[in-house]
Length: 439
Image 1 (cartoon, helix red, strand yellow):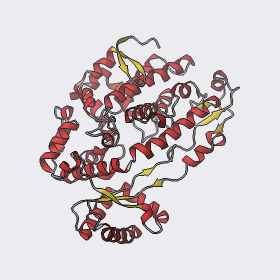
Image 2: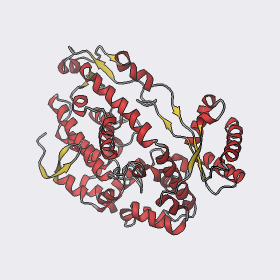
Image 3: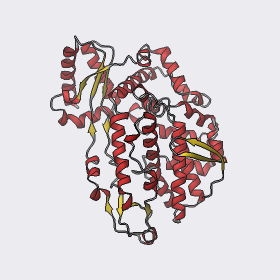
Image 4: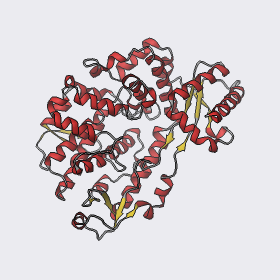
């Protein structure tokens, strides 16, 4: 597609990003400009000081990759110019509904929008769909009614896209197992965290080995095997070393606990209204919390609770992993358990953090990416309804390892001194073992 760019933005990941007039109009809206003040990685900068990049730059990056993928598929007769425009709009707007500090705000957002903090998965996506359709924010005026509907479907990773067959391809490339959102954030997050060696990512090779068959199924040519392996391994490295770093998770969990306590007072509800939301960024949120909670001072000055227990400290922890996952997914159970332990050890703060590393690709995808032999050229693939292919697992032993059941972690944080550590630790282990066994 010969994009009619009216502006070019310099980007440290993709070099130059071109912007069309419609895209510039969307970017100029206050509801989008707000993303400049929403950090991509919440509190990772407490460990990796330069990890302060925003959802704004990430959104531009995803839009840029949508254009590259769209242009590649146009050359092979899969998409047309209108499809590519819609693809780029979806990439640009997919994170519009993220609250302050991104994913750390999701339970509070779910509590306000869905009246259930346990519906935090996908809460920002559901809120994005509201923002792009609500006339007050201006997005629908630029896109039009039909495009708003399609963009809403394309960014929704919880539902199988049921619209136009070509749009199902776009939906898969935006939210599926190998998607442009992940291609951008892995490269971008590793760069800003100062860990570029963890992003073994050849974006060009992955994009240029995509093949689509007659039934609009997505395949990858075998020559892209190592690039795909790099994507999966980078996912593992970043989650293990950056996103799930124990200090990052401690700060993240403490912040979330403060926010959830205060959300019970309803102080954030009004911030989701037009005219308020555009100003509801990280700084605004911190100011609101600081007025209400002394605990926030601890967080801001890095006086955070320390890990007192790891999962390995608990006898038979491996057999309890599935129950640990339940704690992670049910914030109501987790908070009850935290308060019970806090009473037993007589501490004001107890944080149970049990993040779980979802297999990559995730369970909802029935198969790993499908690999075609080199001699299967694109034209032949398009002419056949079925093509000879193999699952990526056959060629990559790493993928079999990464596709195993969920790996659970357990870390319990509290404030303590060395003199009382052993006593507190034993009490917590006893309580945890008893309560987890009941689940």
